[in-house]
Image (cartoon, rainbow, N blue to C red; front, side, top):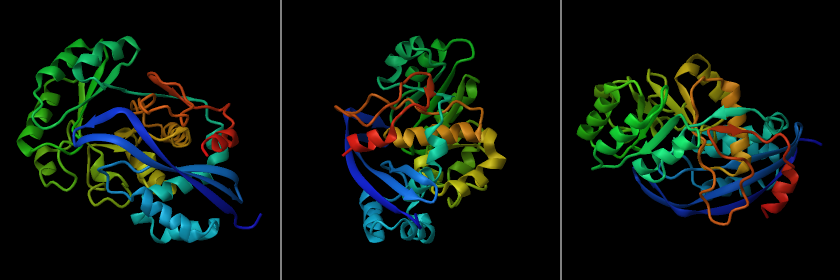
Length: 319
């Protein structure tokens, strides 16, 4: 088979309703599905950049794919040389190289429930069986709604607060103080912009980094940070380097989705299980896109892989 070939397809997925994040609303995302034929056999991967993260755009990744001209060895060489600037493409190639094993994964990963409707949606998510809830907050949001969600949690329940790097330092301090009031509040995720010096004053206790360490193997602060790190496998660069970085930090990792199609989700679930962090993941991302046939998994508090899926048929339907 030689060094192999590849082909790719671009997709745009529109949310049914704009997704509210601390940094603003997201109306759509661009994705690239990759199919490879190489020494490992047939593989699939997904380039899944997320707005606001320091990763390449789908346009930049597509340019590299066109440059490689369908030659898999050349594409892998481009990804090795430019890996720091093409982390989503490097991640997609990592998925494809591991695909025979990824495709067989049918296990489950515990997931936090995203409060799409803010605090008012907490009762519905709890009724679905989610024991860990995630609340998006933005500048100017008060603590009252978060306190109501916290107080409604069942025994053993947890709340996570995510600001997507949008807060001022005084607001961040207030939210971290709220988290430290009660052990039911697990952490405040990315309260400040990625390069904000205020993280030193906030400290790692009850603070998790996400945008700051999108590609943790090259992120400036990743090695020094002693708190929790949220890892999105689709954004995290080469997975061999990621696993080596993660090995001594497993108990401080949360593995999360980046709103991928079924390809990226299957791969991320496999990696979350492989890393074995013991922490609830962030995979409550299904059912949010318009008339979309790019999903194949079931939602719920246990995010399960699909060992039974015909991935060649999925690829054909994505055309």
